[in-house]
Amino acid sequence: MKIAFKCHKIVGGRAEGEALISRRTFSFLGGIDPNTGMIVERGHELYGQKLTNKVFIFPHGKGSTAGSYIIYALSKRALGPSAIVNLKAESIIASGAIIGKVPLVDQLEKDPFEIIENGDYVIVDSDNEKIIVTKKNKSKNTLEIRE
Image (cartoon, rainbow, N blue to C red; front, side, top):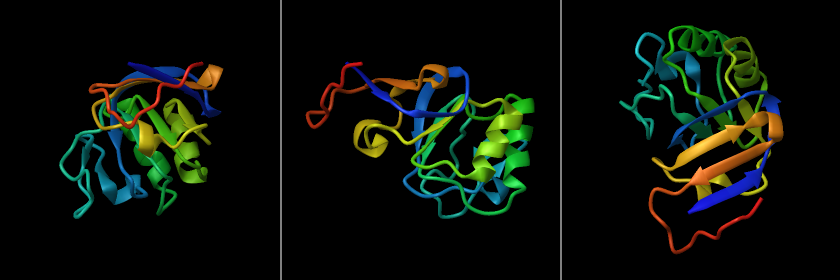
């Protein structure tokens, strides 16, 4: 089953991959190993998972402005997320996505935490302000949303 909904473009581009979802805010500085793409923040719900080539979905960033450079470093090493989806993007994540050329969207038409699950296949078409989700398992609580 495919679900499509609108979003707001912050950084253009089109990318796709499996969803990796955090319901918690995230800091790229100290939250991820820039040499491996592994989430290393102790106690974080995604600790030990790689975000490489994933569509990383989280509410918004937190922490130091140096996090922007971590996003850039991950991108240059091909270890970063394929795209970032935020509820509300802020300057740290936006700056990193811009310099790292990572598509970034926010202000989704629907709550992604109610629709998207880890492992769902997600296409982020930032230029057309659209997200398309292919569910890995059909959830009985998920409604199909047409473009």
